[in-house]
Amino acid sequence: MRSLVTGGAGFIGSHLVEALLERGDEVMVVDNLSTGRRENLEAAAENPRLAFHEDTIMNEGLLRELIPGADRIFHLAAAVGVMLIVERPVHTIETNIHGTELVLRIAAEHGAPVLVASSSEVCGKGDGGPYREDDDMVLGPTSRSRWSYAASKAVDEFLALAYHKERGLPAVVARFFNTIGPRQVGRYGMVVPRFVSQALSGGPITVYGDGTQTRSFGWVGDVVRGAIALMEEPEARGRVFNLGSDEEVSIRELAERIRAKTDPGVEIVHVPYEEAYEAGFEDLGRRVPDLSRARETIGYRPTLTLDEILDRIIEAAAR
Ligand code: UDP
Image 1 (cartoon, rainbow, N blue to C red):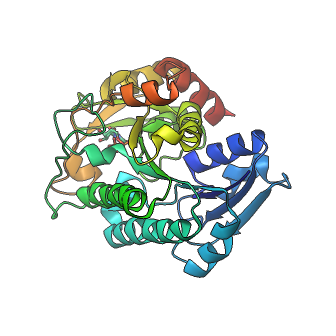
Image 2 (cartoon, rainbow, N blue to C red):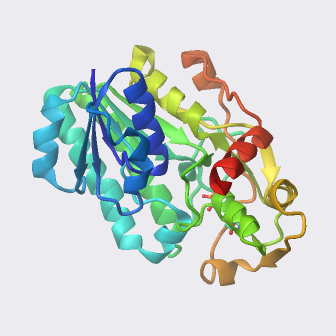
């Protein structure tokens, strides 16, 4: 089996590449190392079944070269991270929409199954959940950059479902909810690696707002296994699946747990949103996935508690 993984040097992508190599796949990676890193693939670098192409998914010529040789495509390449989105909205919109369109169009010419990685951002700012895949999207106004990411990922989902419906492409959408694990970096805004590195370097830990907002964090190993299972399940095609965990935690509590596990002497400070992001930034009060569809279709179940995940992340970061 030969898999193409776009974004394969990213945080989730590199864990997926390792899992596919372990299963005996040949793996082609396309990654322009914008947010991905070469070191993420260090452990796999010597594997003769891995071929790395440092390039953008906007390079149609390269996609036309690689896709005909792929038995399946995991499309993870995207502009990600709330901070990057606020700072570079043009790049975000163009990469996420045009890149996905190219991958799907060329895949459809060859009939190769595609998994499109989406995001819980698509759920928008509804009631906080637990969100089902077919719930309404409630997005904020176009004048707030954050929502350009949600809208671009929603277009990706529409495109994948449309290619399935109209062109018969075996496509499935995986909606990742706040995935965490080793190798994730805090530079683009993600809270867990930020808190861990702040705690390990003497603090302070920066909680945005009052810290009562909640999230549920999915273990990257579970999410990657779920993505592969979705790709291999014919019943999943033409549908959207939430992947993550439904264990909820407030951001203040998260900061306290990370502090307790690293350095109890570290200070936790609260930073107003307008200082952290930009004036008028809209945060989400709560976001929890309903995982029943993935459970029923592929037997998906989170295997680790948040505490166990944090222990693994801290151990990897302290190494
Ligand atoms: N957050 C925080 N301090 C940080 C980074 C993030 O308090 O240094 C908060 C952020 O405001 C949000 C939550 O942590 O409420 C999750 O943020 P992240 O960017 O990781 O994910 P998303 O907002 O996309 O769920």
